[in-house]
Length: 152
Image (cartoon, rainbow, N blue to C red; front, top):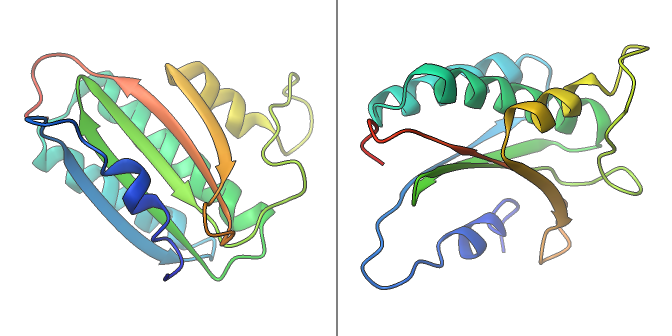
């Protein structure tokens, strides 16, 4: 199974008659890729007509999760998946290796690290992480509700 493919089966399990919009992209795990992840996310959400606060929050969450994967893991690439389904947008970022214990929420804003997950926590309705099913890394996800205006 190719790295990143662990995201596909987990998020494609739809009930009969359900429709979901799904977009997945992979980037090199370099600091410059964070801007690319934001750009790809903005473009896809615009195609899906997701705007306003949910759009802005999603772009920020993608930026923070990709940054964490680049900074805190020994990955060569990161895979990001956006899935719009049932009144929510789910963002998943998979790395190829993970720090022991997984991502940790810092309860203080002191220092240079730890504030990204505070932002994710405050902007999402839920978030979490788990090891990829094929032991190819860790998946960190966040969910956002969206209003009735988007096409998803």
